[in-house]
Image (cartoon, rainbow, N blue to C red; front, side, top):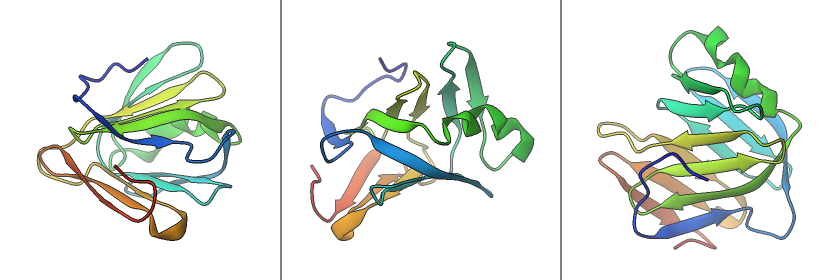
Length: 138
């Protein structure tokens, strides 16, 4: 499942409703952003690991060279099969095509944020914890 050292507790899981959450857009600026048809927006602003459906591993730095994010763009038009955020601020997302993203917490910056319907906001805080607001959180 996850290649991250996991915390003791899963604080939030995705998708929040039954069935897959289809990816409708991926954006690249100084972050890597995933938008779903369920209204979820995941913005990754720190280094992460992308595992392709074939099992190839890519260390990705969103604020680095944009062309190096190419492998991660393969999730466009796939869907979120499962995902979770743990109590150490890490995020793990599995996609229907068999690929996955692992985002560890960052000691100095917010590694990732998730915005969703009904005021949902999750933030991986610097140093390794999660702040949460809205429905369906921890």
